[in-house]
Each structure stands twice: as structure tokens, then as C-alpha cells.
Length: 442
Image (cartoon, rainbow, N blue to C red):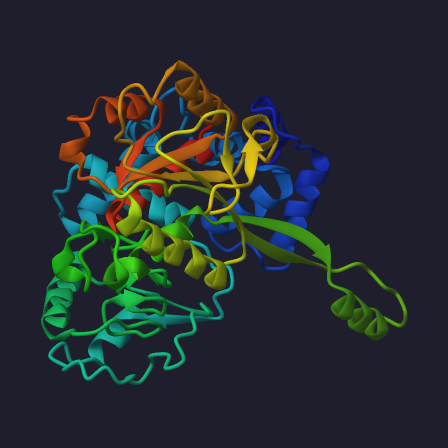
């Protein structure tokens, strides 16, 4: 299987040769590859050199290791469903669990298992043991219980495995927990929340759990639920102070991770001294994560004024939570040759200057797109098209309800240029998923 790897990856225009195999063998000898997910992330660090390589790498990996061949223009889900690998996995699953779930829903479970990684997981916990020691009728007192981080940190150095617990049992227990939950929780193993090893929530490390809200990212959940009955915010309500953290969790989904192999100097010296002065280089992985975002805000009219503060607050919180590169521009209704770098719209930046920036930025345009038809003239439409052509991932977030878009001629025109989503936590999550789809298969 590994001997033919360079040839397969080169067919997808990726740089892979015998050195790739040697580096992979080193990683495996050091115990860095324990799961297929580990193999995916280690190889991605060895083979990809820019974000544009990630899409071809994913296709090459699926083709070589899983015999899943994605034809041009075909969604990943369809390629998975028609593959023999998925059918064999599905047959075994049905024998073991006697389930009756549509194929499209099983694809997510299949991919979650494929991408499960042991990276940074130092302690594997039994999900069944966690459930056995917790009373599903526990009352929510807003005080940390055993196992929940009181300082709201979210360091994932442990993982709980719930894959042996029937999905129906998890759903039943989640409903019981939801009846008693009154507040937001992080970092624990019991409540519906973020981080930690609870079987229900998002942003944590719970293999075979249920993702509730958020954009995911760990590829470990068995099912995903966006029903507000299981989440203490209304993700479909307009963006506001009481649901901003749900939107922030979705923004985490645009984070890009890269893994570099670097020399571990302290360990190299230590081992060399043990070997009598024979210093053999010992390498380690360095994982780098970043968010690159350009924010373009319509701050020129009364219809947008209620949303400016909350949007700025959302992205300001992003600054403090994640490693990032955030640039903000402003406009009134639409753009005419460029945008402004200050909220007062006195510092004009030409469109050509904006378009020389890294094309891999994720660009969010915030505006209602509703204006007099004469304002959105041919030159303005051409400017938006230029931006959309340069930046590979753009999305328009509209504070108007989707039902109102079709009553505005200008809104309808702009929605044909960009994918448009409601300015809600759920809308932001949908925008992130669309951006990631473009990133992974561009």
C-alpha cells in the first residue's frame, strides 16, 4: 500500500517521493500514527505546502487508502456512498447494531471514524464509565461538578470513547440532562456544552458522541443536532448578545491547521548523551493553527445600525480567543472601486490594493444588500465580482430574514454573486461549512 503512495499522490499534482515514505516511517516508529486519522494529519503535514494543496491531498488520501475516488464536481458524500469501502463498513455496522439510518446520515459517522485522531490525547477514558457514575437527574446549580473545568480552559489532553454506547441511549440521556440544564457549561464530562469530554456538545473530545451546536472540527461525533431544545441558545435568532458565543463557536470552524516536522533539540541532546555522544536528530510535530479573516461591514445606513456593534463585538471576541489575522473594511450599501479601512469611511483603499492580499482569506460581507436599484450599477457589480474571483472563500451575512431577500431586487442580484446566509449563529455556521467545502475541494 505504501510503496505506491508517491505515485498516487503525484497523480494529484502533489510533491511526494521516497523521502515522504521515509519521513512517514519515522513518524510511525515514534508512535505518532495510531489511527487512520493520525495517518491523514501526519501525511498532510509532510505533503502539503500551501492551503491550495489541501483539496488535492484529501482526494489523494481517500483514493489511495480508502478506494474512494471523487470525480470532478462530485460531492464527497456521493463518492463515499458509491464506494465499496463504505458499503462494507455499513454492512458490518448493520450486523452489529441492527440500525436503519439513511446512507446520507451514515456518511458523517463513517467520516468521523476515518478522521478520529489520537493527536494530543494523553488519557483515553471509557465513555460508559463516565455515564455510569453520573446521575442524569442531577440539578444544574451553575457550580462546577467533578470533572468540569472551573477556569473555563479548553485544553484537550484527554478523550472519552462513547462508541460502544448505543446512540439511542445517548439521545435518551441527553434529553434527561437537557431538562435540568439551566446555564452554559464548558470543559466537563456531564452537561451539554463546549470543550471537555461530555458525550453531548461541541468543541470537545468525545469519540462517538453527539455534536450539539457549533461547527465541529474533531471529526469524532456520531450525530449532529442543531435543535434549540438541546442547546441553551436559539441559533436561528438574529445575532445578539445572548447567542454570540454560539456564533463564536461556529467561527472556530474556519481555523486552518498545519503540521510541521521540526527538530526536537532537548530530546536530541538528551538521547545523544545517553548514546555516548552519538547525536541522531529526533523530530517532533509542531501544529500551527491560524484564522485569516477579512470583514467587510455596511455601516452607512439606519437599517444596519442595530447590527454594527454586535458584529464588531463578535469579531473582537474572536481576536482574544484564537490566533488570527483579521482585517476590517467598511462601505455604504455597496462598493465603488474600493472600501474604507476606518469606520468613519475617510480612508479609502482601492480595490486593486485589497485584491493583492492572500487569496486564502475567508471574507465575510455584512450587510442587508437592500438599496435603491440605481445604486447597484454595473461598475459596482463588477467590483463585487472581482472580489469574489480573487478570494476563494466569500460569504454574505444578511441581517434580513431570508424570506425578505426575494422582495429586494438588489438583494437578489448580490445573492447570485455570493452565497448568502442569515446573520444568525446558524447562518454563520452554514457559511463556515460552505467555505470549508470550497477549501477542501478547490
